[in-house]
Length: 155
Image (cartoon, rainbow, N blue to C red; front, side):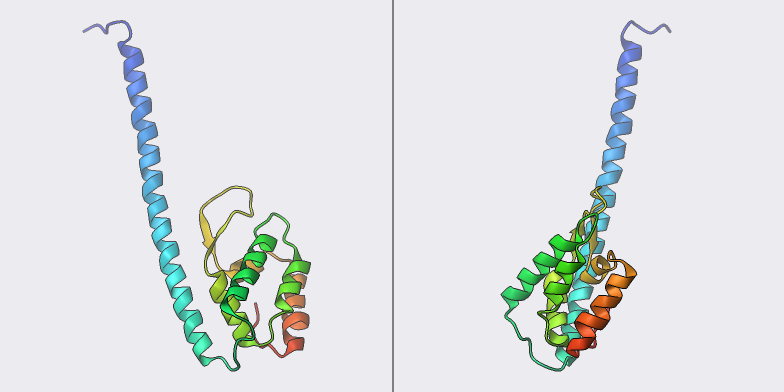
C-alpha cells in the first residue's frame, strides 16, 4: 500500500511527539521522586537536629528570626561557584555555643543547590554546603572560629 504525500511527515511528527512526551513524562516522574526524597531527608534532618537540640547544653543566644537570617546569609555565601569563606567565618563568629550551631542548622534546613550553574534540583543541608569550602577553610572554621569559642560541633 502506497503512502499518500505528507503521511511520512505526519508519521515522523507523531514519532517525535511520542519520544518528547515520553522524555518529559519520565523526567516529571523522576522529579517527583526526587522531591519526595528531599522532603523525607528534610524531615529526618529536622528530627535529628531537634533531638540534638534537646540534648545540647546551653541556651540559644539569639532569637529564631536571627538564625533564619544567618541561614539565608550563609546560603547566599555558599550557593555560588566560588564560596565566600570570610562571610561564613563572620556568621559563625556570632555563634556562642553548640546550641546556637544546632539552631542555625535547623534554620538552614534543606535548600536547593544551584552552585554548579546548572539547576539539578539537588537539595542539600548546611553541612553539605560547608563542604564546598576548601579543606583548609573548613579546618579554619572548625579550629579557629568554633573551637576557640568553646564550640564542640565540627563540620
